[in-house]
Each structure stands twice: as C-alpha cells, then as structure tokens.
Length: 409
Image (cartoon, rainbow, N blue to C red; front, side, top):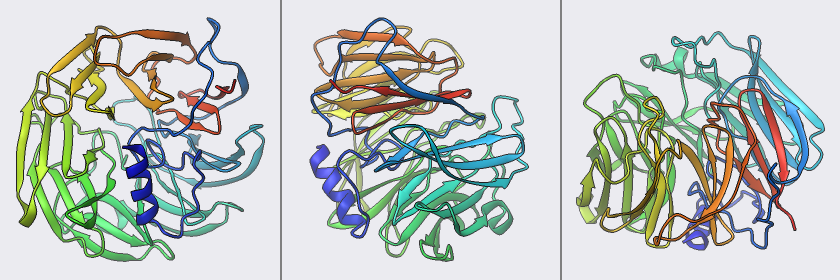
C-alpha cells in the first residue's frame, strides 16, 4: 500500500523532489502514516532511544516536518508565530521567519499554531491559528507570499482557531477555509492567488489528502459538513457524504484514509466510523458504519494490510483505547484499554505510537492481539503533535521541547 500511495504522491507533485526517507508533511510522504524505512533499532533501554539533540520550543501542536537536512518547526513564542529551520542532524538553527499573531484560544488550552507545515516545490507552506497562510523559501527562509484567510474570506471562528494543514497538489495549495462560497480554496503555489473556490462548507480540524479515484486526481476533505471529494484541477465536487456530529460542540480532526476506491472517515461524538466505496457518477455506497468500532476524536488511524489501527474514544473523557479493526467489516479484533489518544507510524513491520501522555510505544501490527515490544516516557502531557521519522531519526515534541531520537542500529 505504501508503495502505491507514495508513487501516487509523486505523480500528483511531479516537480517535487522527495527523498524516500523525507517526512515533508502531516502523516508522512503520502499522508497515510507510513514510513518506508527498515532495519531500525527497536531494542531500547528503559529511558527510550538515544537522544541526539533537543531544544526548547514555544507553544503549538504543529508537527515537525523534514526534507533532506532541513527540519521545520512551526511554533509560537510571545505574540509571534515562527517558522524555524534547523539542521535535522544537529539541531543547529539555519534560519527563522516570524510574523505577529493576535490569536487567543477561547478555552485557554494553547495559543497555537495547530496546522503542520507542508514542504513542497522548494517552499515551506504554513497556516497559523489566526489564518495566516504563508510560503517561504526552504533554502533561505525568505517570504515568497502571504495572505490572511480570516481577512480575505471571513469564515466563522472555530473553537480552536485554524488547523487545516495545507495540501499541495502539483502547482496548487488547497485549504479548508470554511467560508460561504469558499469552503475549500485552491491557491497558486507561485504567488498565493486564488485559482478556484468550492462549496459552502465550514472548517473542520481535519487535514485533506490526495488520491486518484476513477482515474482522476482528487483532493479528499472532511469538512464541517462531511466528505468532499473535489476534482484537483477545477474544484468540482465529485462525491459528497454528510458525516458530522449532531452536537455542534464537537470537532472533526482525523484525515480521511483512501485505499483504491474506498474511503474511511472517523469522527467521535456519537458519530463513529464509516467505510465508503466510490463508484462512477458520484455514487457512494456504505460498506459499514457504526459508533462502536473506531471513533477517533482527532487522531488519524493507520491502515496496515487489511486492518486499521487507531484511537477509539475521546481525550477529554479519559477512556481512549488503542484498537485493531478489520478494514472491510469494522469488526474489532482487539482493544488495549487506557492506552490514550495516540499518533501512529507504520514502519519496519510494526507500529510506533506516541500517545497523549508523552509515551513512545512500539507494538506489533497484528490482528491476533496487542503485543508490546518497547515503551518509554519521553514528553509531558498533553503531547498532541504527531511524530516525524526521517533518515533513521525520530522527532517528537510537546508544548515545551522538540527532541530528536536515534532509531539507527
């Protein structure tokens, strides 16, 4: 599966230079939580894998991303959102780009930013908590272009600010803006000008993914209203499916998972998971749907073989489980109670988890039962950002520090 989707990613971005071990966007090269790296070291001491370097950080839940020797950290210090480029091997600063932000979290959780940067076409694309969409040169940190989505489109304010990680497809940057007539907006990667606008859907906290369905390159969004599969070139809506909580005090956070013509969505708040099959002429059929198999509040599950692995339950209720679920049927194969909300990477024949308590866990990718291989307490609670894995180095962060760990033998 990884080889198929990774080749698809390269097809959709023909001029993007990607190394096999890069981690240039949310959930990795193909936004599916898979790494192609092998022969890593899973025999850790109790303290965890060796620390290569670590630095203090500002606030925010944006994940680190890596391209070659460049690591990008997107965080907030004081009243500035900062795009910081570090040497991925040493942690030494290479450049910094900063701008002022006025975002303030209404609930006092964290003042952002929430969205993970995307590296493509030699640029770093970021989206701040107050809607600041920017593109800076990866080599120098020089600003290429910038706009503010709140000022330009006037979407309704979300519960926790703006959090959609930009999706790059070819020469386009796509974002769930969430305004009337501009639910999804496509920007030109060269100058930031709007190319097309589609839907009236409000914003969610889910980030989109790229796919090919029925022979067409498409962008797959889970907006506030539900599934939107949009033609990449025009924004034309090809498939729609309402899938959102009935309770307005809720969020959709998980990225859709696409396998060939099948699309999996998961939302918590008494909504649950659904597997859809896309047919011709915009027709979707439900293969299964329920709120008992895999209901993820904000973390994206990972598909390995014919099974899904992910979080079932809510962080704020304190009862989130780790689960293995059959992709085709939704049958629960096993559950690990009180594991906590977790981010996952499928790598080297198993799964790597970073849970909300800041624990790094290695376990088997098997439907035959939960089998843990290693565990280490690394960070503080809440650890929300997803980890990044590139060239044998694992990058993990919370709201206080960024740590580089070696998984090399």
